[in-house]
Image 1 (tube, rainbow, N blue to C red):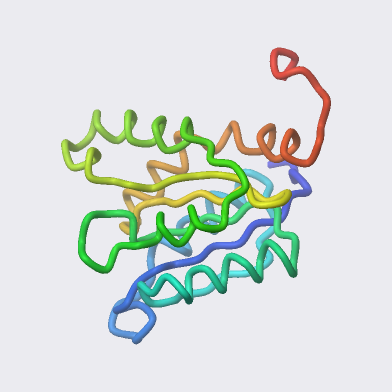
Image 2 (cartoon, rainbow, N blue to C red; image 1 turned 180 degrees about the vertical axis):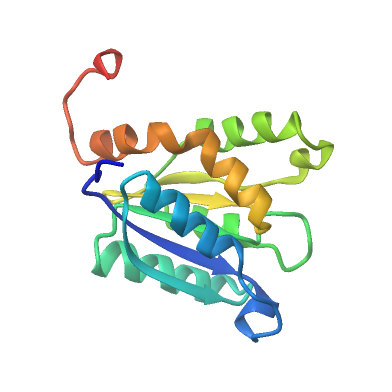
Length: 167
């Protein structure tokens, strides 16, 4: 596929993954999907379900590295440790509710558990941040729902003036 020219980073949020007790399969799956869509992987990391560590990774990637697209995987459910949306929301300049809504609507056709997903998306500076589920299947399916809109979203975030109807 043609390169978008946009950079991406993948943050896996998992206590077990960070301790080496579980192999991360969602992060590599997302890396393949994003590469196939023309994104250039800049970084990938695994952190435990701790708001401060999630925030630190996101801040580094946005504020220091200027990565265009950051996807997180994990920590979007209703378990006591699931706090990825809270960590993300605290950093956003603007929220984009339609991304999370689209993912939940599409997921609801596959499982009633989709209503428990709390993933959000939004913009910090000129970076788009999106929370995805932690399972490989859930991450893959949710990214597939929104993937075609992401290059246009990033273009607009960066100040592109092309009319949305022209895309």
